[in-house]
Length: 96
Image (tube, rainbow, N blue to C red):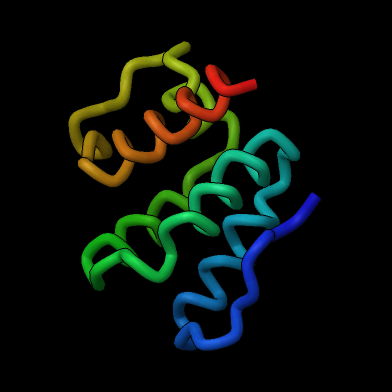
């Protein structure tokens, strides 16, 4: 499974970020972050783009533990965007 949206029309920074979200390393994180990016990449403001870029630099296991609730999100990473990503992931799980 890969992106469901085209990168056509996205600026280079967003195209690169979309690709990075779909190519994380752990398949679970590809699906979580890739689907999230598909849904929101066009809507993110520059600050949110920077935050999502920062999240893509984190190790998969660490980020996955925060998203799944297995570990608490440290205050320096507890942002509105990460909370949106967590909720997006939970809502997809409930829908399945």
